[in-house]
Amino acid sequence: MCHGLALLQLLFYSYQGSESSTSEGIHKVFGEAKKAAAAAGSGTIAVVLLDEVGLAEISPHNPLKVTT
Image (cartoon, rainbow, N blue to C red; front, side, top):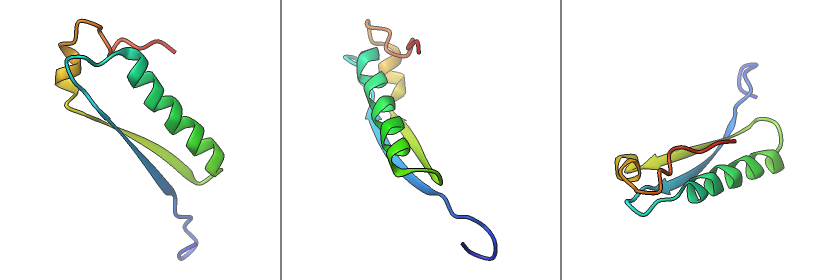
């Protein structure tokens, strides 16, 4: 604690988008991030960085249309 403020731990996960991206690949990285944050306990936040998401957008697999 710093002056009464709790500091959060951030876990970073990255997904490199491409024309061959699939929704399964994107869903997998979010699942891994969620699992790691839960294992780390409270005070931990998982962040997923979607790099080159524009390339994934033009993939014939429609990877950005992920359902939960």
